[in-house]
Length: 349
Image (tube, rainbow, N blue to C red; front, side, top):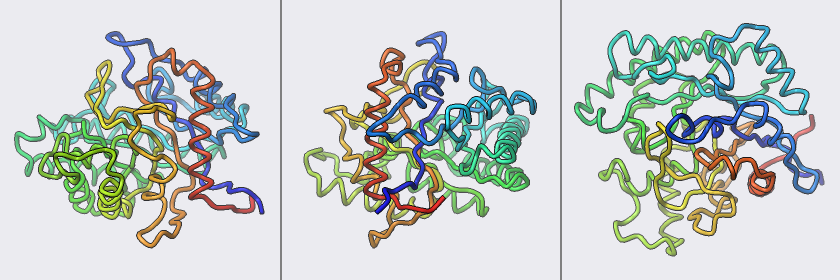
């Protein structure tokens, strides 16, 4: 019986950029990250692809066709594919708040359009068989809390406009479930806003490290699921919490990040505090990666959804020293393989 070959296993390039910068560590260039991804191997199994950060220093959002062709060739030369893209919708890199002024919101939509153009081009080049464009609200929870009702209306309207633009390029947008983004920092609020957007090409990006903190209500105490005195050794209660969370968000999930979290928050550089990404073998990790991934990859009856053609590892804000070690990526790949063995399937290609 052939081993599972779906979902495809991708690494992420943005850990080389997110949390890096002048007030932290230097960014890691895209060539190095592609090499680290391609070189990882566990029992003859390798990564199938890489998800890209569509912004400098990795990939200029205004890159022309020649630059995109060179990127596609570079990835293909390593026997990899390109998957999901992160749209640079934040003000420091040309975007704006999704609940900001009309000008800011227009900048947000413009950045989404540019990312979708890149995504479409990569599909045409045959290097991108699956993937979405990832977005967030580009604003912090404290600013959002000044007027939640009105701010949610603005975020929803901006997302609608972005979805309409994305549809012109055959793209879907995945709103990242991360507690550092206003209007997306609580699981109920996230679902309500996705419903309000009311577009067929809007969805949710679940990251196991980020969504774990939804259970704790870290930035949205009124949406906490686990009890205040929760003991991490109480696996039964944790499992029930994950079941409640994923029952609400799994139907929306169109992009999925495998990750580990130790139950704390962390931020570095200009990136606000959010779920701490831990190494796959971190002894303080609170998740059983292979088991808990199943809450997202299987339905309430335990059946595979097969909605996700690829899954991605996210290790944002790992120190550069850790990221440069081949063992780091071999351990991560091993965790990804375990997820696929438990929740994957086989297709003739």
